[in-house]
Structures are given as structure tokens and as C-alpha cells.
Length: 494
Image (cartoon, rainbow, N blue to C red; front, side, top):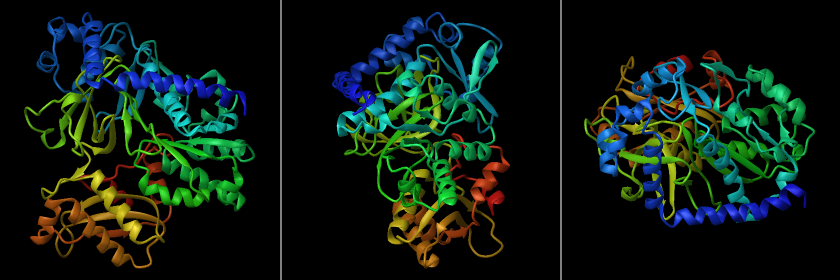
């Protein structure tokens, strides 16, 4: 046993002890965070504008702090970008995380000296939770790879600015630096394909124990290695035993990824966002990810069906229910207040509070009132693939076909298969049948001859890679939207 794996076990036990303390009182923990955040931000521009000095209870908080998305918070962000201090949070941000906005172009999300610990410690604690539960820490003595964006940063208003994954790279614990890959120089390469080839050059003969990244880009890494060697990943990296991922639902990629590896391995799901590290998978035995209630974020939840109402319900952690979709709202020690990050989640456990990401609040299809969400299309695809085990899926997205040249409108599923179904017509029927079961509105439209059953459009190899390359988002933390209410993506893929 190496020194890293040896000392990780008592540290894992300590973190487990600390976690269990706040798990005993989730409502009290969150109430304390709400009060602490409000108290510390009273003298900020936002705190003064929203009467933080008058807030004593959650009901007070809801009256003073409206729910906002980035566009609505942008005037405060622009003040930070002009060099102003004490705007959303005390002092200036430590970093600005740069991310893509759907309507505003680039978004700049503040990360404070207080909130950086949420990002770094949560990632570390996810690994320690795994070690505590399984006793497996041997991979820490091998090489570790984190497929991420460039760690190079610019400055805006004197504040370091870059991608979240690159910012996090600067905070990898010193004891892991010596076995972290790829090299800093390689990680700074902007062009994804050039970077990927260089990563392979550096890692292909190394004892890789842990690999982390967004599944489709890890799959691309694996495919390139197999092209070079003609071997399964388990034969190239016999010590590889733990896969860490986040950003997308793993299920659509799982079969192909494990087929590329050549064996099943343990995996840990993370839920990091530029706005905060929300949750991580704390158990290999239980579904869902542990919602992090004690790391500087006060969470609120809006029932997804009410999100676009004029006065939707806003709930705290003690008011949520199992298996119901909620829009996630955060208030943080980075200075995000009533901030809608755009994701929907549902609780799969209330003791402790574990969640699954069910979709994006603005990513849905409702061209005819069906309101199909990401969770439904992913469940349907998983079901169809289970009935057709020969299928290996690369990627897919769904869009409405409102005005076809003939026949009724339909939902078009643009799918890139690594291995297609033997009978694509039956696969299509199985997929549609599951959608009918999952969404009663979709069923009504099919039964009422408003829509015809869905249509699969198989795409040529590398269609999604070519699309992401064409929009300058190949690799890193970028991902293809699972579905849309228009055909902007579909028409470029078709």
C-alpha cells in the first residue's frame, strides 16, 4: 500500500464523520446557511438593494429576493466587470468562471475566496466517500487523469478568469500533483483534437488508475487509444479501476464506454457547475447524488410545472417531495441570489437528500403542448437499448418536425450509433412505446392523431463531433443538448 492510499483512509473516515453530523439536521443546516449568507452580504450593493438587514425568516427572504437567471443578474455582474467591489458578495471575486450562455453569449460567474472551497473540497470528498465505503484507495498510488479545459486564465477587472475545470486544476491537492496527468503544458492546448493526441502520447504507457471527464469526450479518448493499439482499455491500462464523471447522464454512454474498457469498473457521478458544486454520488449501493447542504449554498426548489408561472411556489429543503421535478435555485457565498441555474432535479431519497438531474428547465419539446423533458427521452432510450443489447450508442438529440413534407408532425430523434440495432423499425417502435408510457400528453397527441410516432434519423459516424467542432465547442466540458423545442441543432446535424 502506497503512502497516498494509506493516509487517505483515516481522512475518509473523518470526512464521513463530519458529513453525518450535518445529515442529522438538514433543515437546521440550511436555515443556518441562509442566515449566515444574508448577514455576511448585508453591506453589499445587492444586500442594500434587497433590504438584507430586514430578513429574519425564509418568508422574509422570498419577499426580498426574487428568482433570477443570468440575464436578470447581469447588471450586477457588469458592475464587477467594471472593477467595483462589494457588489454581490463582499470584496471582489477571487475568480470569474467563464461559461457559455444560451442567450447572452459568454457568462461570467463569480467565485469568491469563500466559495472556492465548495468546488475543491466537494470533489475531494466525493473520492473520500468512495474510499470510506469501499476501502479501495489503491488507484491513488497510480496515475490520475482529469480531461478538462485549459488552466490558462485571462484577467478582467483584475480578476482571474477562465473555465471552471481550468480554475479547479490550479487547486488540485499537492499530494496528487505528482501523479496527475496530463502535463500542464498539454492541458493548456486549446484545440481539442491536438490536445487529445498529446494526452494519449503522455498517458498510453502509464499506470492509469483513475480517469475523469465528461463521458462523450472520455469515449473519444478511449477510441483514439484503441485505434493506436488495437487493444481494449483494460489491456492498455490494467490498473484502471475508477471512472469519475459529471455534466451528462451516464446511462446513454455506459454500454459503449464499458465495452471499450472491456470490463465493468466503479464510477462516481459528480454534479459540479460554475455556480457551485451541487452534489456527488456518496454511495455505490444507493441511487442518486448527495445534495451538499453544508458547503455555502442555500437551496430553493420550484416545482417544474410552475416555473414559468407569475408567482411559482418556492420551497426549502424541508418541503420537497420524492420523484417530483424541481427547478434548482441557489443562493451562495459567491454572491448568487435567487439564481436559477437552469437544471431540474428530482429527489430519489429524503433521508439523506439524494437527487438526480432530470433535465434543463429550458430544454424541452412542447411544440404541441407535450412538454417532453430530458429525463423522459433518456429513460426511453435506455429502455430501447436494453431491449436491443446489440446497440452501442454514441450520442443523440431530439427535435420537433412541425411541418414535414408529408404526413403528420413528429418528434425526430437524431441518433449516432456505434453499432445500430438489427431491426431499426422495431427499435423505433420500442422507443416510441416507452415515450407514450412516460408522458401522458405525448400519448394523447399520438392517440388523437396530432402527432405520428417518433422517427429515428441515423447519423453518419462523427456527426456530433463535427457539429461541436463547427460551433467551436469540441472537447473539454462542452456537451450537446439532449433536446430542443426548435430545429437549430437538428438542421445542422441532418
